Image (cartoon, rainbow, N blue to C red; front, side, top):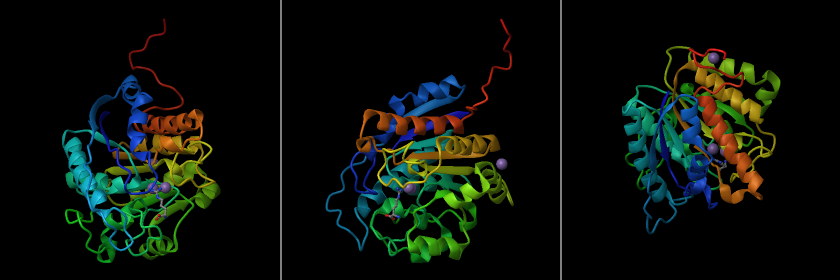
Length: 314
Ligand code: ARG
Ligand code: MN
Ligand code: MN
Ligand code: MN
């Protein structure tokens, strides 16, 4: 695997300070060295710098829309570049509003994508259905063709064009949806495995059916958008909107192992790691280590172990 990493220390898609520090914590836990240790070629493109956007007054419900729009425009360019350099792109957040730029930049370099959204939340509120005004709860509504007519004009978002079809999105891990989001999922017929389906089917069948759905016609490159709050808060407590009853560590790892085996993983987001929200050093560690292990699973680490093809027993 050749992997290009971009850090996006951005937090204005939500209101809790600290999530902008997620990327550096994931790096400090040894992500680059560990990826190299499992045979990846890794280029770290560093962190983006996001300038302050003055007078960023709300637009309707939307909080700090200009900062979010500008940050994602920058990120989209960076992801497009990393893809054109021939890498699988890893975007380290930051909050989940960054999926707007990450998926846009990815789509600009490819024809069509499948998006696998692993999250407690659907993040598909529109600017009119959002109960909070936080844009990290809305990125998919800006990206999906079928919702285009529901998105008003927002300052600093004029660069953005929808780039994903509703049929090409799959959710895993859902357990906290707003009414408008549930309506949109049903209305557009979006494939979703809530925690109820994970309980009913088990994670192996969920992944089988996820792949069947994504590969039903042509094999599109996969964009995996992984919100760390998909995992149970006992594993990843240091996050802004934790919800009880999430994926186990093992279910999370299984998802990444299975996606890796498809050979179609083209970009990954790892978002919503907020080191400020760990109550203890151990809570921060557990959250950050889970993020690292999920990324290692995306790039070939398997739990059964492995050895070089020319290995000889001494
Ligand atoms: N549904 C809520 C909202 O729209 C929560 C979203 C949480 N999103 C996240 N990326 N953690 O505000
Ligand atoms: Mn979430
Ligand atoms: Mn499969
Ligand atoms: Mn999310």
